[in-house]
Length: 106
Image 1 (cartoon, rainbow, N blue to C red):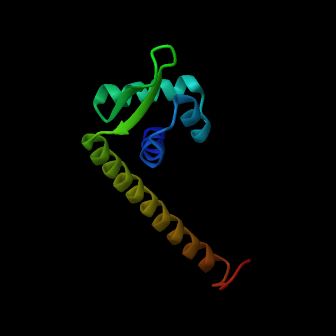
Image 2 (cartoon, rainbow, N blue to C red):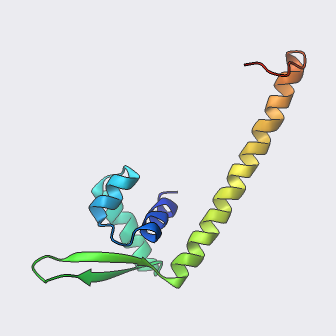
C-alpha cells in the first residue's frame, strides 16, 4: 500500500520532495526513491525539474494514468477493508452468542 499512500501525498502536496515524502510516510529516503522511481517508470507520476541547475529540485505530479491508478487502488483497498469489517462483524456476533448474548461486553 506504500504506492497508494505515496500517490495520496503527491496529490495533496505536489511540492513534496523525496525527503519530505519519506518523512510523511515514515519510510527511508531510499525506499521513497525506489517507489517513486517505479511509479515514474510506469507513467503514473511525472517528475519535473525546478530551480537552478546547481540546486536541482523536482516537482512530482500525478499523470492522468496516475489518477486512474489511485482510484483503482482506493477501490481495491476499500473492498478489502469492507470484507475484513464483515468478517470481524460476523466473528463478534459468534462470540456474543458464545458468552450468552451479552449486549455490551465493555
